[in-house]
Image 1 (tube, rainbow, N blue to C red):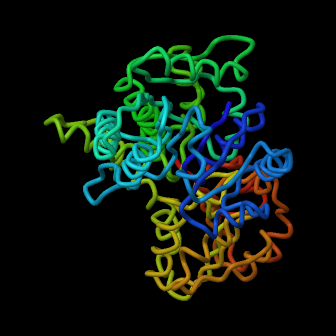
Image 2: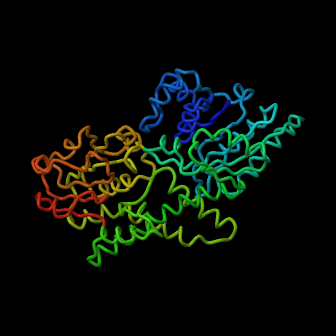
Image 3: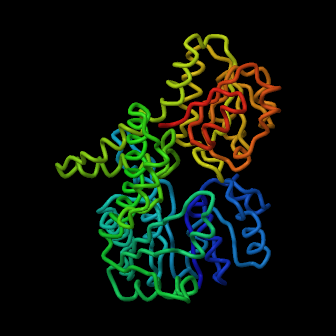
Length: 436
């Protein structure tokens, strides 16, 4: 099948590459000429484990192509995916300008039945706006061309995105005509030979499923963080509480780990957008507003714990392990590390940071701030009065305590991810504070 993927961000590049891996011919399109030229040379615009190898293999096989022009590629395409960004507006609603730009370009170009599938995360009702934009372009051309519109939200987790796409737990497809349904079933059949996990529904429901899914996961995280904070005040062991809750088959254990808040490109944006969607129809999303408030507070907890233990932070050197919002990615959008670093600098601290992947992204985001960037997890500890752990990378799980004792000036560890056993760290001679 000939496929066009508009947008070579995280979703578009991973999705397009995985479709190519199944034997389809995929053209990935982006208006950013520099990014497209880089991809043609094998330069990845994002970090995702295994993606570079997959891109190289399919590009060399001629199944994965790159272009800056939808108009030049659409004649042979059976389906066009729209995977462009939907950044939040000032009020938190999703900005649909790029989505509608794709729809208008689609309407200007198609000459026969072609299916336009929205993979971007968009609010309920977007499909109607897309359909209207296409229809206006066709009317301005004075032609009558049949087309289809569908919704196919993505459920990729950064760090495991390729496996998530190749072995999906479900594929949600919102359609409005039988031809679109047949195209989508044909496209996804190779991904589910063992069992059919495609959920076909109306487009509005598909659009809502994406927002509701991310909002539910964000809710679990904020709930567990709220419980962890209460456990810390009441003397309860949050690990025991988490295991007790997760053992209930009605609840399950996933997304119940306390920490210093969620970040990334999805949860913060989608929670805000769903809250705003409710407001647009006069409905108050009370639970999600609380979820957002808890998460905003949770990002301040590591600094509050540090300040409680070291009231006079001015002039102190504070080391930070982890900058990405989660392990397995260099994504720092809405990352708790940003909240921490800004608070440390405001308190007059000297800040040194280390992350195995996200250092370049940190330098881009923090270019005007006096932060020391280190290339080793122990280098960052030299003469540090305290260490704050923000991202639970695997290499942090079994540190060398003797090296840390020798390297650090102080003995304070603030763990925003609850990576260690309290008694073990204390026996190694450190003061250890965690979440809950």
